[in-house]
Length: 369
Image 1 (cartoon, rainbow, N blue to C red):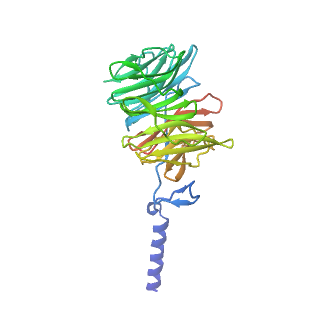
Image 2: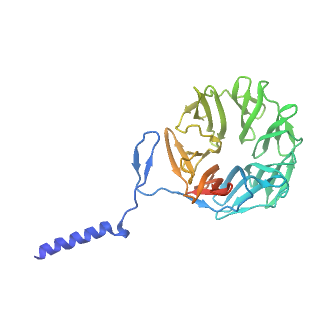
Image 3: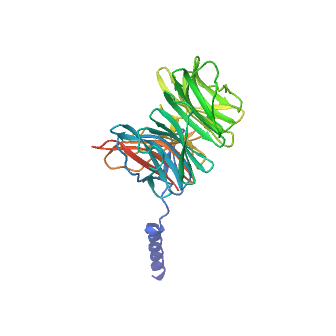
């Protein structure tokens, strides 16, 4: 009898240990791989996206760019609606909250803000006001402005690194590439067959990249410190370039799309310093301009969501593509992250959300951190 009682007590203790909330292990998380279609389980929950509050702007709003220097310093740019046209919007993340900055020159005048870059300890932002372009610089907590040497009819893109900054666009005479070397501006020539520059980015003052429309199609150009030259990138036939990511290691990633039999297909190209390799992850017709290298070493980009009330993100690592969703947003009918940035161990997203019955306004989300 005593032996039977001991067995029953042991079984009861075992069952309690299995079912007690304090004894349950973290549930496994299933991640669907677009490469294999298989579900794999991890031992612990993976970080999930969380919503961050953003002070509202006057809709409709436009998000231009997002850049982060660390977990407690990020800036997002764009524009909002006003009676006299667009007005620039600038938001700062301090690691805890988003706040709006209205202290920069021209904050209360019609205009827009474009790309934002960190240059050493400064923040540089492209600003268009009354048809004129300038670079806003924030140093030691104060803003100043560096005007362009001439007004352009179209301002296409801007990039800055220590020792150099570029603005590309057009005036009535055609393509313009303007470079600032820290003391003044110079106009740079491009190869003769270049018709239009669609975007520009840089790794250093002597290593910049641009993607251009030429007489023979899309071409990638490279500045080597002396001249702009064709980089001889073997782009897929009938393709466009959306973005180029040059990294401190020398690795370069290109994201774009190609047209095959009337169907749009996203491609990625990676340069290791010697060879270009092309992959075609299952991203459909995703516009890759918001792509970044995440803190985990993988490529991350926002994609069109199949859920009206949640954002969606793709993670691409080699041949493996996985997806994650942002937080559920009650009554949302369209959630669109526009830009991503690595903020220390976290990923920040900035974009717009449209709640049923209202116009789209600003939203932000964070993964990890």
